[in-house]
Image (cartoon, rainbow, N blue to C red; front, side, top):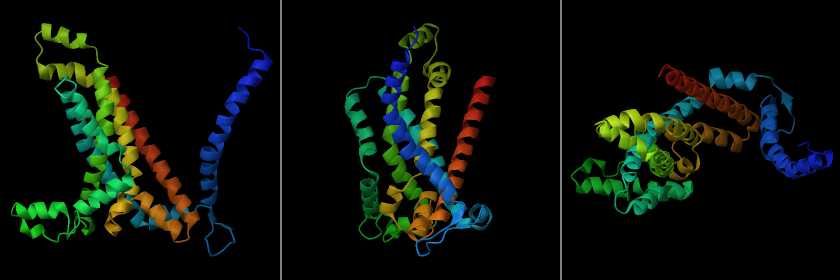
Length: 292
């Protein structure tokens, strides 16, 4: 059935508001950020000077603090991928066995995810507080008195792990619920046929659960990397320590210090870096899937 010109115009009119919003709030900011990154401009000086790739050159080869921040975000992402998603899969496997009060456990595991990052950061800031924190007092009660007054959020070796733990606590529920939905989508008949063939629990997981849940796990991992690399509100509400710098906080500090053009260049570099990570991850997954 052919669509008349009047109908095409009507369809276009319905789509037009969404397109305008998309270009206004997505495409235009990206293009403006890219344009700004090639100029030198600050809040004190209204003159705009074209500097080409000077900002990019400085970020890539003369800004070790930025790459240290990228490394910190990478460490948080790696811990979240291994510990958060691994534990989320373990919990999803348990809940999927129809244990008693399963709905209650789902609500408990999902509740940290719905808490805002600022509120979660303030809660964990109180827990890790060196003077009044619950963690230090609990360790002291158990006999570890050396942790009295220990500043978890202001030490080079404990700041990032502490933030990562709070981040994983908050993100666990999202990974858990998505993986649980993936497990519940696997037909029960597969497991019944495997039991008839004499397969035990581990063999069922290895040959049925794991291959079928892998695509879901890949999606969860992508979202975990994205959420971990762009973490900001949790860190900013927990600590102002220089040991807790990640790319988003570096960009934020650069903006408030009066260097928006340099910040725009950092945004572009960081975005390209994330794109490269995702492409490598997807390429590796497809290669491994093809070999299987």
